[in-house]
Image (cartoon, rainbow, N blue to C red; front, side, top):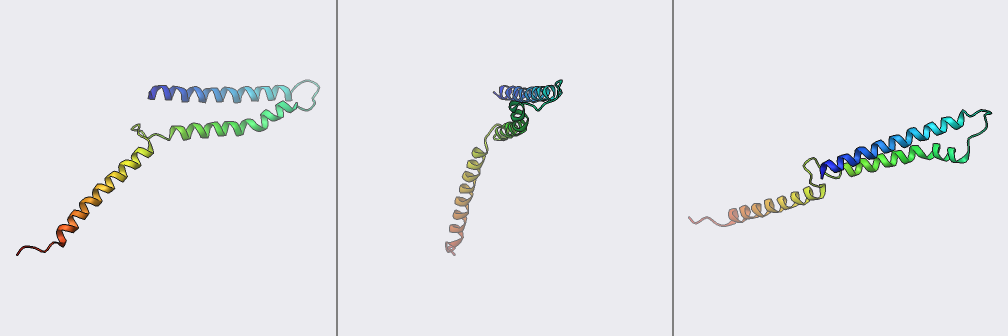
Length: 106
């Protein structure tokens, strides 16, 4: 399972890189066309939105990757384990306090 996720992450990263390089090649091709002229609105749209889309894709990739810890458990599971441990500790402390409040037989 972890290998599949790692493979998907690399495939996504390579796909984003290929898309970025392809868009830049198209942009440079149209900018350097003979006769000058202004680039078409499609090229302008690609050039203006591509960095934003790449940034959003990278952010989603990082956020999905960091959802799990290195041990494979999610942050929510770790938090629930911490809450359960705190409840056990509180119960033990209450038992100690009760034992200390009882008058000693003596």
